[in-house]
View 1 (tube, helix red, strand yellow):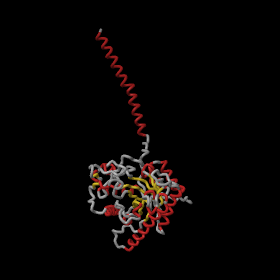
View 2 (cartoon, one colour):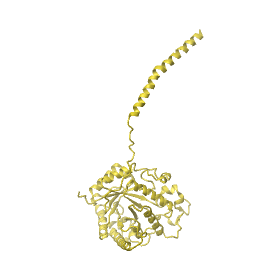
View 3 (cartoon, one colour):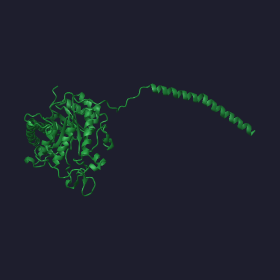
View 4 (cartoon, helix red, strand yellow):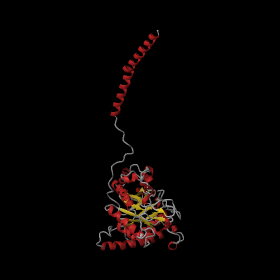
Length: 403
């Protein structure tokens, strides 16, 4: 009896399996195959973050650049970028300066520079589609300048401590008063790294590269600095001048500009950081002294608080800078050297203050700086750029577009 029961169970189980594989499971397999075929016929969805091809530079670049500054975050924000575009379209502005590498050493977008990825400089992407951003700006006739910090670079200092400044007292990396690490300006590997980033930006269609922090470190215990490459005998001015020359040689066909301390306009030395405006005239299409009145020390030219005298401070600085520019251009015109005077007709294009520091910078004070820039130019073309770290600007200080 027991054997009969077991036999019946075996037969029933076998019949069930047979029915399963020949009916229900066949249906599921058929159904799955049909679904897969339908899926293959569906068009592939485009990646919303995919960028467009690289752009060409703006065809009709403005002779006189009037720009506002934007962080990488603003460049990557549709809302903020639209605000800046509308501001430019409604006023006399015609250009924008956008960070591609800021004080942190992080790049604003994913580049094709292998070292940037290796060094970890692309971990904080702010602009997802840089080529599309450039097209949007160029379509509005806006000149686009890429701002690139150089020797203030914590990312590179971390990845390549052999290139960074160190502390003589602690043996650790030297930091300025803000806790930021720096690269030795004489470290030529850092020169090549920055040139590669600039070339990537130019290949995408940026119209100009604006180099900032082309200088030795300051704002800290500089006596505690140990330099891995600078011999501390060669003048700082010569180190920075050699770097400027290297930029021009490496980017010979590009539009280049350089940010300098405001005091470089009236100082005939190197302001203690290697910057001399006469050297910069040789290698840059535009020189941008940061003549923010609030950054001049109290007592400058007899003013207890220079920030309260925007016209006077900017005029004095830019008048001297223009006189030195005229002298340079005269020598450049008469010179037969193709190496010393690589740029024949550089322009002055100062950074002006549109932020509250030392005084409330309303439309009157912002406009006073612009007027002082024109007055000091005495016939020499001169543009200007407005700086506000929040990227919100005083439209009332700007002339309206008549178009």
